[in-house]
Length: 99
Image 1 (cartoon, rainbow, N blue to C red):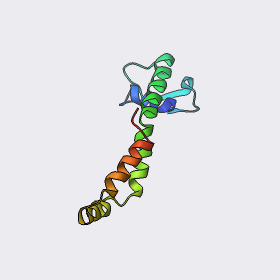
Image 2: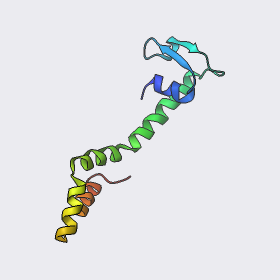
Image 3: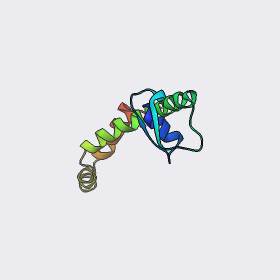
């Protein structure tokens, strides 16, 4: 996460330009009612990173799910009385467990 994302999260309706990745160089195009402090921005960067990190398993699962031809797998399982699709999904969930 970066400072721009944190500021936008804290002040969604504001518009600003950050010259560097340094909160001291913010130019407010649309000034919010309350300008976030450096401490608030730093805390929001940490919070947003934690939210992002907590979803790592979901991003990894989705990447693996996208590689499967799930409709065909389910159809073949129904026709052949197999569990290939369920087995593949369970393997992905085991490889990338929910915390």
